[in-house]
Length: 59
Image 1 (cartoon, rainbow, N blue to C red):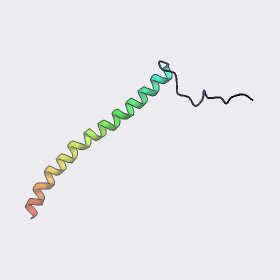
Image 2 (cartoon, one colour):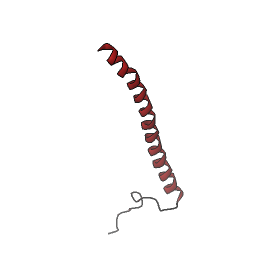
Image 3 (tube, rainbow, N blue to C red):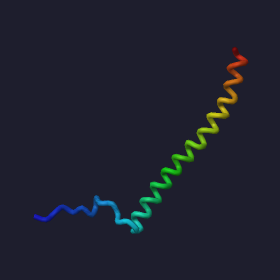
Image 4 (tube, rainbow, N blue to C red):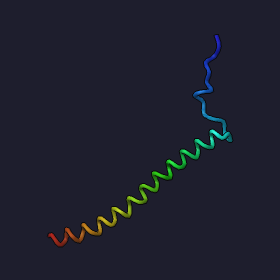
């Protein structure tokens, strides 16, 4: 009986083009998520700058 083929499920070897592509894809995904939250912060701040005085004027 032969052992099962694990090459399809094992991660690419370090330094191989496949591992670099995997790392780049993961890094760009993390960077995209980070930038999405960085944009959300100023938008929320600006909305708060409008809503807070409006709520004080309304009473």
